[in-house]
Image 1 (cartoon, rainbow, N blue to C red):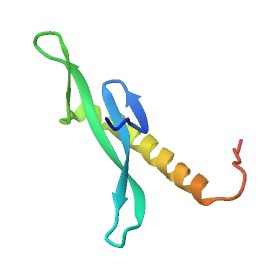
Image 2 (cartoon, rainbow, N blue to C red; image 1 turned 90 degrees about the horizontal axis):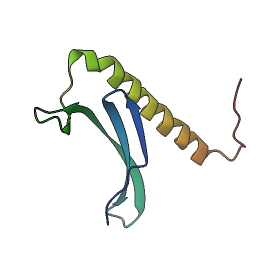
Image 3 (cartoon, one colour; image 1 turned 135 degrees about the horizontal axis):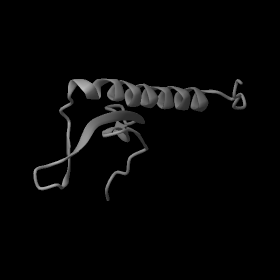
Amino acid sequence: MTNKPEKKFRAGPITATLWKNSVTRQDGTTGEFYTISLERSYKDKADQWAKTQSLRVNDLPKATLVLNKAYEFLTLKEVDQNSSEPEVEEI
């Protein structure tokens, strides 16, 4: 069984992928945590799509954007899970 991503954020060739992971602690309790993978898509010499974790200087603003979106998503998700209040969207 493959682990499917929880969420993906893409800006041009840069993608941040959120992965939900389960852990069993030494005391037997279970929990969850998230990891984020960051990658850049590009076309190789054979004109085939490939991916790398290496970024160029011009990729950094887009990497910052997708990482901020991932952080926002996880932070709001944590607040939603810990709150008994109804969801409120401020305008």
